[in-house]
Length: 158
View 1: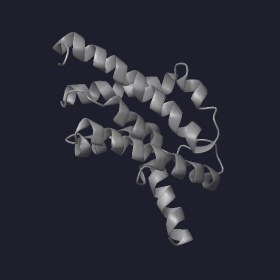
View 2 (view 1 turned 90 degrees about the horizontal axis):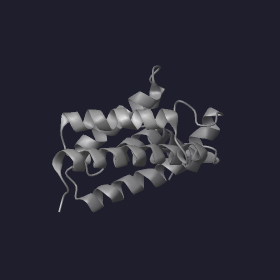
View 3 (view 1 turned 120 degrees about the vertical axis):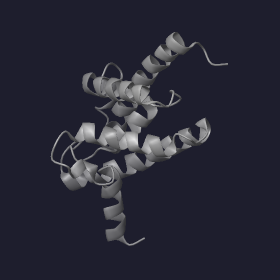
């Protein structure tokens, strides 16, 4: 692949398909990009959905690593692929409805901002891995809360 094309592809992925270039609340906008992807991919079986998330995660590490060098800033605000992947994790196996999406979005943003242990520590890792892992942690925390709410409100799935 042409080097210039590869560089543009990495930036396109790292910026969440360009969402990171928007001049306001990039993390929130990136999370909204995750909502759109969830809407598109939620009909997948759970294992294909996980494969999709894992693929985006590894692409995100690759792209964010490059973008950090290009933007000359650690975890630049332009890089939002981490928020997209984090939201997709938060929404994993939750019921498909507007109320659950809003809850997933709010919980993910809260956990992404407060970064409870060990998610906050993951952000200290260098490069794309550190950029991605703290949001993966926030997504896992949000999903655990949502799964608890689902069981409490809807009963266990069998």
